[in-house]
Length: 58
Image (cartoon, rainbow, N blue to C red; front, side, top):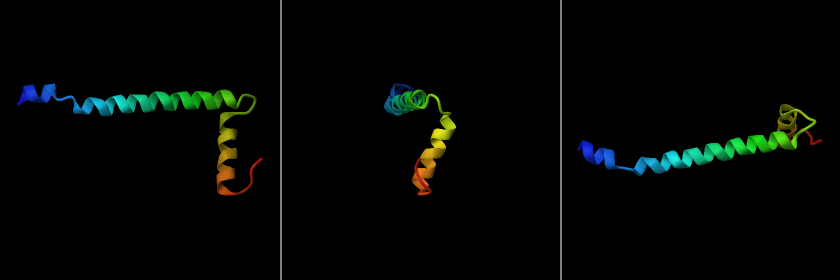
C-alpha cells in the first residue's frame, strides 16, 4: 500500500498548475507596475475600481 502511494503522481499535476498560475500572477503584477510608472500602483487600482463601480473614469 505504501509503495502504491509513493508511485501515485496524480497530485503532481495540481502542483505544477499552481506554480504556473503563481508565476503568471507575479508577471502580471510586475507588468502592471511597469505600465503605471509616474503614478503609484495603488492609484491605478483605485482608478480601475472607480471605473468598475460606475463613479466615473479618468
